[in-house]
Image (cartoon, rainbow, N blue to C red; front, side):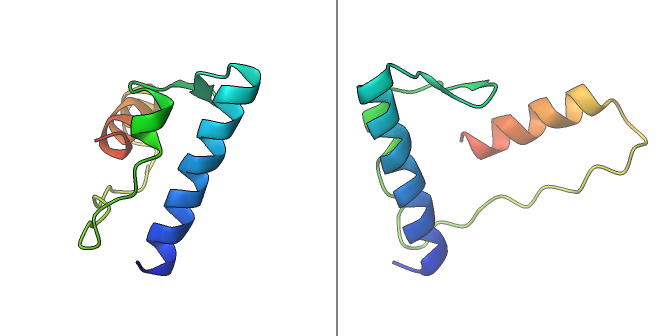
Length: 74
């Protein structure tokens, strides 16, 4: 497992622990679409994060954020 996958795995584990301990079902302002156990599952070793263009200010910021969140939760 590479360093990024390790960090992602640890973040999901932390989110799971916080969910179990404090009943948190979201991270920041984003509601989680899956159970904490599913979110804590490690990514496959060949997983590649989707490439998303940086926000350039020329489009609706809310739409850009929704697209970003959708890509990150896939």
